[in-house]
Image (cartoon, rainbow, N blue to C red; front, side):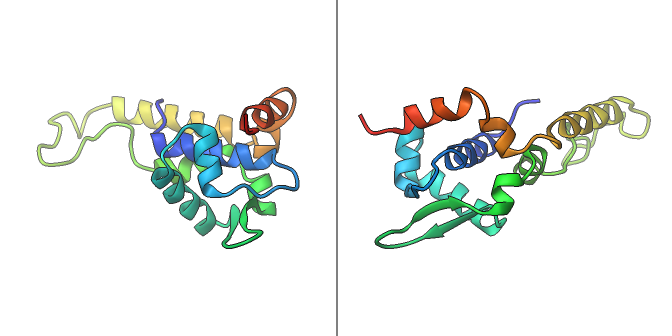
Length: 144
């Protein structure tokens, strides 16, 4: 399964914030650290804030920080939220598939999608940044 760019960016923003410790980087700093346009990052940050996964404070002393929910959220929950619960293949639409009533592919792909999510469900942001990943994220996010 291939993730949408927005899903990938959401996961990377959460990972970045999971390792910053006491600092609160701005949306612009996170975007620059990851080499992603600010506008895309701002949209993702707004969605993550709406989900209750991060706090965004404006002004002097402001910045981004993970909430407790953001630290413990499962990767599966984030992926589901950004990818949606739709089918992997589009069987309905302007020209519905003629095999729609007898096709087994749709069900097999749905089961594969659920297995994918089930694998990600027990994994938290804290799990992802544990080990060598956390220090590496900090290293690449430091100003040159």
